[in-house]
Image (cartoon, rainbow over the protein chains, first blue to last red):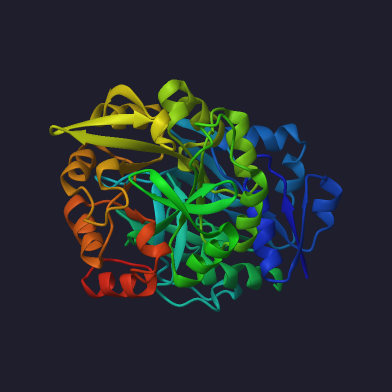
Length: 197
Length: 255
């Protein structure tokens, strides 16, 4: 039972590692392609902007490695958005990792403050090991301005002006738009379930 | 629906949590990590740590305690104090802080906000504003950690709010100095005026003394979060009771 956290050079790596420590789960942070390929489970964290994150992934020589992952993968926040084929950041189209089909776009917030920041509810939970210990309406901590639309990959939705994908699954690849490492019991349940998939 | 946030604020000086009244006469209220863990267990939605003497003493917050706090917490936290460059902010974020908050250094050099946004994205850039009301006008002060070093900035609060969000602030914490530590309620009028021009999350700070004050600031000023220190440190208000009462009053809370 161990998790490899990819060093995407743009993320809260320490926080994610500490979250696994609190659960008694071994994790390691790495940017080594061989280690990443060999890992049982791979977590892709990320904060900040998609163009910057993708350029860092390319610079680190990780693009082909991350595109070809076959083991269970979990993307967090920007790390989830990077799983997609395309990210539309303010009119600038960025190629993602293409592990899941579709496009990430700006979250339309209307008159509400943006970014979407704070604790919001998870709804429409679908069956999956990662949602097994969650309850409809559980709160998770979000901070983002972009989001993935709801699709047949969606495991949970959240609404901020409009509903969007809060959790998803496509084969071996899963994602959380929120930060499980900062989502108290809800997040701990998800990380624990990922570690024992 | 997005929950309103309850945010205990821990003023840190020399590695300990302290609390003053109207930014003066600080007394020791406890160990940083112990208090952080207590607030986490009580259901705080987020924590803010202000190293209140960092800017006035010209030094930066310690990465060591940030890392210890990050290890303990499963809720987000923000760190402030003397953050005056991308490198300094990056080290705090790498140590485990979720957001960094800038105040005096941004007033001295507003381009700092743009630089931080470019480097880390606006979601982790908070701008703290210390605002003082005099004769009905709201003005921004800087270097408020030490009363003898506090400066007038010549800036009007509403103008500065709009400037920082156009420069890339992802959240604004408005510290209403007249109300700090006096527990007579938030400055609703000023917060309403700021809310009207603020399109990023807005956090109220200064004046919390009773549950009714929290309800009033959420309902009347429509702020995203309410920050308080002394009422939590001195256990005048228990966070679980506060959140339950606010939820019972119809506000969306994380219980």
